[in-house]
Image (spheres, helix red, strand yellow):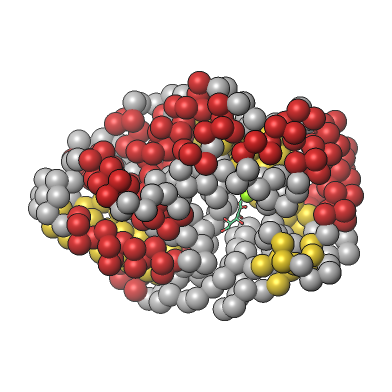
Length: 402
Ligand code: GCO
Ligand code: MG
């Protein structure tokens, strides 16, 4: 089964998405997501200018060999741009393989381990009262797990809080917008949010929180400890993880479960975090972590160390990634939870898909492949629009992590 065509489709139905479509001489095609928020065209060029010329004429069924060819063959390994491009090709090839077998993708991975994939929604508000009301809205929609984010008193704006509550989108500027950050103001506000949430709704729902890589290990330890009475499902990205051993200090001080990894691009970014049991959930997902072929290795390593999956699922991960992730989640033995931020109706129209939300779970269909397509005519109606994620400064003007 020879690859005869591969093309990159860039579309912006409200936000930018990069998609690869690979076609074979048997008339089958597969699609993969290549979206890297705020750096989309770098991946499009990496695919168009460097990978696609080597892809044409190859046997589409040799997924592992093609993965190794692009990973080892670049000499320059890893990194988000390269690994996202490899992931896009990998997912498109798995889509083709499953279509050729006339099976939904989860069957090729090993079959169903569960009936539905538990997801968490992203409730956010400008202050505690608004966030508490938003969490109530998610509970009413049937969610079993909700991540709660709130504005910080004294800071004009912050990550995780947006005007459009249901379709959260942080990439909001033709040039990066600048936010201000104060760790002490933040640390004072978060425990109050979770105390109010537990007082209001009790302990029947899983609650999660994202710190977006803004604390030192000892600050994260403080936060984790202060949240212990509210029994979080996890505390996400509390500490930037370039220094994996930095998590030891954080880990030793708190029993709040720890999740990290949405910005990782390979197993080498989390090898120590997993093997030293410094985390409970690994968030690296298919599009930024080298595709299904590589995520499978991460999940297997994690399984040895009691670490479960909790894939990233923000709006900048296209429905193609969501579809592929849901097949993976339906199979993977050490599944934990899946993030689910809803896409806008425009995005859903460009990417018709057969997964659906059902009372707190996402459920996949039985369509052969990963069950997500791209409507090219509709995609062409929405040309690329440059959009950056914000940047962040401390109150004295120092550049900080966004
Ligand atoms: C999340 C994330 C996102 C990121 C976004 C960046 O957990 O959902 O932190 O909202 O900020 O994916 O592109
Ligand atoms: Mg996050």
